[in-house]
Image 1 (tube, one colour):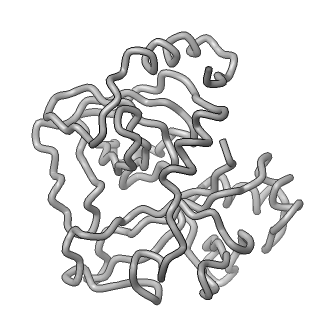
Image 2 (spheres, helix red, strand yellow):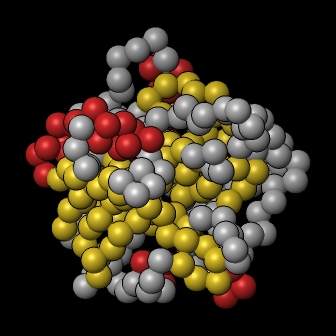
Length: 239
């Protein structure tokens, strides 16, 4: 049996997982109810593992302009697909639109979650997202390569603060590359602030975050001046 965090929502999560159909592929029907395990959340989208198929999706959520995304990793959220799914973005083939802001029904952790993460982890069989460098022109994408990568890093990760613009970066080894990604994980930024450090790695990073970062969730950004950039959406524990 999967392990659940002991809170008043655990029964809801347990019931949802027990009743969900298990599918070999993603089933997207406008207006359908969907359930996802959160991997990372930004104002642009929330990356989830679809709990019916085990596939990774990018839920585009209609947040108000002044809202800050509040879904934390390993939360289970329930949403409704929009009538127009907007699922034809060639640079982000995992993207699908939701009709409204999802509700969180609980959290999900333990060996079953570890298996889900291991199943979607990206193999180190070439450059991240299929190209070297920090970005690629939007018009080069054909919808045939993923825009999300869950990376079990070879070395690192290390998080750094660049004082020139107060930006946060994640550095790790991937294949033979020394990868630097702009980090949009607000929890990582707050950990650097709390530690009053410009760089954290190893045990110090684990202490600052409150967990050992096992995975880097990397995504491709929306087009900016015609290019899609590699970014870090979140750092994740094993579960």
